[in-house]
Length: 242
Image (tube, rainbow, N blue to C red; front, side, top):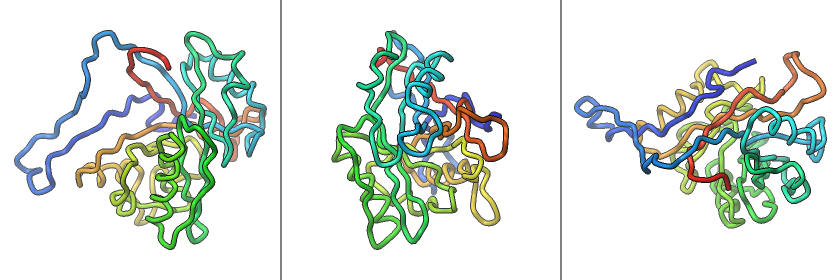
């Protein structure tokens, strides 16, 4: 199964101010020279038996490495599956980046963020408001040395563009998530994640779209309940893999 954004490079789209859209053209932004840079493929969201995946970390890591991925973030819930324990699987063209899915909640709704390249485990934070909960967890991730990625905003209809617009220090969200129950396409009066992104960009929010697997299952494939790998991936252009 492939999602609508599987394999896409999602670029930042910078729009003119809202009041000037009729007069100014849309611009794509390239912030650095591409000279000497390479493309690296990776996934930012995968689970192992350390939380709610069905396979051990070595199985998960080998699946991605053996299929030509260059980097992987194992994002088990509220814990770090340490890359150092899997060092035997890394090589010149494949690395592991520390990660955690910080599993926050507000009024029963999931407020999940992937913490990427953090230095310590982040305990999910709570606050009296949805915005406060999202912001508190993002701030905690920054304090732990990582950077936050908003996960599956339409999962259980937890987040909306109005809330994300008001956040600070968050520049990534999952435009596509490979889980079958996260409503990438929206529903009823809730926009798709692409529509959400459009609302944010139009209002001047600098935020990038990410495609992820959110993979949980390696031992069974093909039913509507399975969350298998290989559904979403990202390409990073960089001078070196680190």
